[in-house]
Figure (cartoon, rainbow, N blue to C red):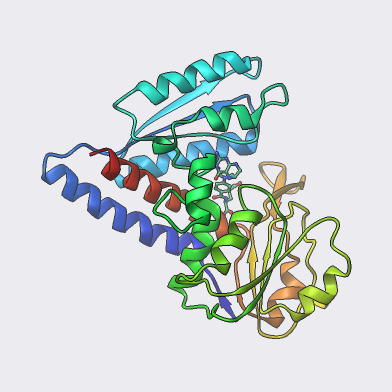
Length: 291
Ligand SMILES: Nc1nc2c(c(=O)[nH]1)N[C@@H](CN(C=O)c1ccc(C(=O)N[C@@H](CCC(=O)O)C(=O)O)cc1)CN2
């Protein structure tokens, strides 16, 4: 069994990006600049945004963190987005999700200038991804594709089951894996809450991508020997024995699934760190496009 080590792979990618930034600086070119907008006080979101800013520092990008209170109105957030769209110093930016309930996420994502949408969530970029045109790929599915490619996990002609159909993970994941590209060429089934006989599907799958948000949902009895497992879930479970009061759990019950797997991503240290590395890759591309 091989662990697909997202922590190490993301460190490799960050080192590659840092090299490119050094070259840009040596040529007197502009340093890529990422902005991140966070609305509210969600603990996990603050951790992720903090990690994004830290990653920018590590590779030599400029970064701007915009923290807005929970009570921020939709109009105020849209005004901030307009400001970022018009700010020439910013190459790309993200609005951390989820947003507070009173703000319409679709309205916000539509307002982002597609050329600065380094999350790849704008409909223009989703369309370009589906049409296999150059664009910003959503960071989590992009990270999964990169992990599969770097570890040379066979995907061509394989049966893939993606559990979850979210716009930011499950749906793009299914599109990318079915495309004729590295780590693609697979036959993909998208399963979701209305799927009948999920276990029948997962038992036949060569690769399972679980992006459901239900802790330890996929268990050993649901998978066949030699399967590849990609765990996208991260849930904070209360654990008073831990210093911070919680432990992280993926959507996969690692102890029962890992012994049957050929390749598996851990949580933490699997897909999560890859998300940040691929956001940096998109930001580098945004900078290059703008230059
Ligand atoms: N605007 C966006 N919002 C959200 C995205 C996104 O891509 N863009 N994805 C997720 C959260 N996310 C990035 O924002 C993210 C999730 C997890 C990790 C990560 O490195 N996880 C670590 C554990 C970290 C911890 O909780 O201690 C790991 O898995 O090892 C990075 C980014 C939803 N929102």
